[in-house]
Image 1 (cartoon, rainbow, N blue to C red):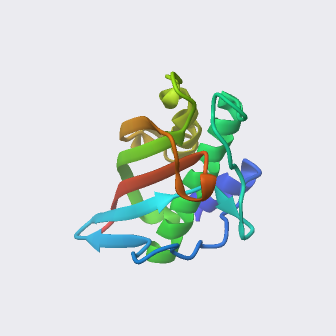
Image 2: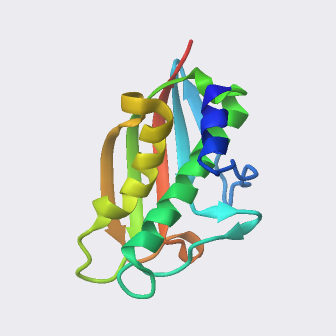
Length: 153
């Protein structure tokens, strides 16, 4: 329970596992890899960051949105594994930022998620990453992030 202790020390908590908003599963395990469906910035039964980064939301708002999306990824992993210490490494993160036309700082926004994973897992928290812009995301979310994670056998 080292990772959960680190989360507590950072003043963060895992949100309640969000229910799928469509016809899909939150995660699918294939061997030692877990593919996690796109996670939006939901906590306490409510979307926390709705808006357009570069218009009505700042880059800092976007980073916090990405962090909440990342906490939801961890909540899915906890439900799948029972213990976040079973994560070996983050393999890939595919992320979307709902942003204004001409916005080009997608990586800075998604650093909110990457920084959380690195602070929790060290170098194993750094993944190959895609950060792109979108004109719309589910429910007006500022971010949506999916991940591929390698776990203990």
